[in-house]
Length: 453
Image (cartoon, helix red, strand yellow):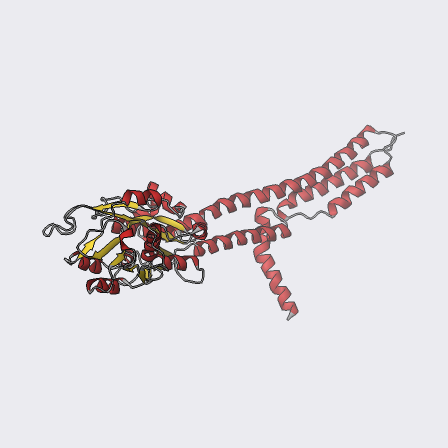
């Protein structure tokens, strides 16, 4: 068995290493080293090719059923499906829960919708933004005939501020606190979801409700807007809020914008609200980042009651830094290949160019340089022996008294012994045997030349 293994090893050496060494003029050890280096670089290129492939499945954390977050996620899913990417939608209670999921490495999500103002210092360093996709107005509906323009007027009332985990609740509590309304005070703060809150307001169980798109459906908001006994609060202090809380925007619903026939609203209504950002983990594949931003552009570019056409998505940096891939997309659009080819074909070609073209650029010069360096080193050895042989022959011709035949013979023997110990590849065989012939030529002259007197 051992002899068979040795025979197999000799066959490999003769069939692979020997031709490689002879072709490039390398020694056996250097040939092995070069082959291993080439295989290592090739292995890295193959690993990189498969490792950087965009995943076919992406998970987004959205919002409650019927919310604008969920509606947007469904639209994204349909657009990504055209590029053969499956977008899994993970429902949530809203922005706060989305942020918690994105920050938790144990939760399998890559992107999510997060409204401005719900983050903290830890989140800023761990996540990136793909840009803002829309405004998120805070709608405060209340009962009663008296007009309400300030939140402080709700002190001591029953308020539905949104469920735990929603951005609605987070913003509502912050605004109420600015108006002196604390969570443990006389004002009753109820964590009802949007449907329960709307029904409670309609039947008089609560005095006001706070609603936002991350936790309330359009149907719920429309129902309240068209109810004659329910009113939408006009934030008379909107400018002051936006100066006090930098992530808020002063928004306006023009008179009649909701329903021209019924003139809803009956006058311009001022609202406040943050923007919604598409937040991702920093390791999101660049190709999928482009795909998501292209979907966001298709979904959010249209004009609405609160935004102009083409205003979103936008590279507005707030709590989260804009990712490098998103910045490039906003500045120059999709990468070249993705503009002209289907997504997966562009991804394949791009990875081939990135993984294997540099490989060729590295291996070809390397295969040329390594043999050149090795040949240069071998030639230096030959030159050293020739130099010693020439020195010996000059001493012989000068007939110096110090150049005794026995000393010259001893020097020539040393040169010959050094040459016999040389290990050279077959590509240097002609030079090797020429050197040995030169030694014999000098030996012949040494024998034929009479000693100096």
